Image 1 (spheres, rainbow, N blue to C red):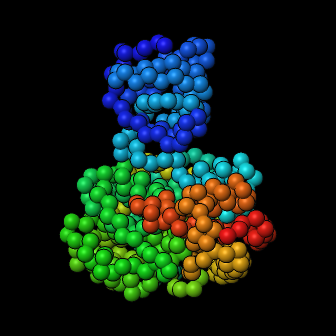
Image 2: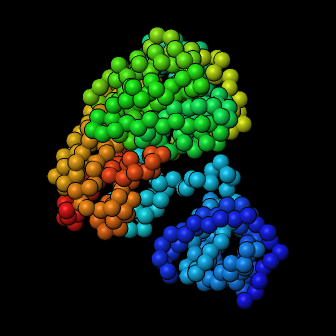
Image 3: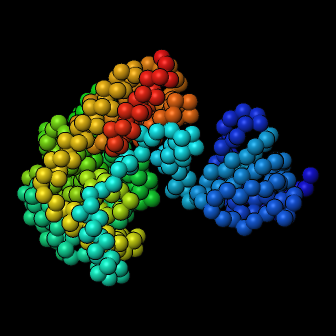
Length: 476
């Protein structure tokens, strides 16, 4: 056994699984490119994206010795390291401390699992049908017209105007396209630019759990002090008294999402009025993610910026992808008064600078679509929702009401599995249907362990086929 004593690292390790099974290890500190001596040098390669496999003999400064066959290091994340046959394990990793608690998104993991097992995916919120031809043709024409270089950093002028026009139509608010509208690369970048541009390390920010996973990650990158308030089934109402006890003069911002992913909840006027009142009273900002605003089915969607006294303290974020089934375009925007736009634009400049020029031109056509487009969109999704909800109930799930988005939460406990992750893996591998475990949307996974999320942004045949698989194979 060769000993490697020259490296003095401060490392910790975590190991999960049984002897001779695959272990997931997370290490802290050190340098994962040099933590092993390789038995056969010809097998060693420089770090690269994907998986790097080698056989190793190694030792570490605290005397722990490892012997392995088939060590696999995943360099695309720098964090996930799999190994077979380790009796003891001490691994280091490259991830910055502010992100070391995170993993590759659950959407990526479940999508890969679905592909591997040829499962019907009702997991990721990605339509399996294409967006409207008139929008795509506008982008294609822009390419032909030579609009292929960097556009103006905060948006192609026509798109900024179209966003302002749509916002006025939806909310009654008049905004300045040049000074209050910023085009971003998807709403995820709008969230990142807003948080990094307006939140300082140590600032207190309130989230409502369950929440879209990028909120937690982005706030962590900004060094925010995050407070989480849980929305509980069956109606996922805002616990007003808990909110009142948590908000204070120390609170910098509240981040809300309505219609809400993953619950399908739409914040009521009463809830929004209460939030607005508390924010005005305590001088708190609101960051509102409204990407599903055109998918509000049973209740009216209200933008909190339209409430009295709120526009001056609100950043409203939205995108093209959900309403036009063009999620891969990643065209989003943030609307805010100039004093807030300044900060988020500074961050945007150094995150992405600009968004694809021809796709912005396509987005202009989309936002100027006739009202009939949005009427038909809502009608179509209501039909898909009905097929999924009734189907899940017939299989044996308890299904919670979804008033918006294209997601439904269901209780999997009638099927007797330990938690949502175990259930979703079983559902994908054995039944051939992929869903998303909801515990990943909570700070405390225990709060979501009974829930799984299904997406109905699929054609009706796909939804029906998934239901049929579950009816035939999934037993209580």
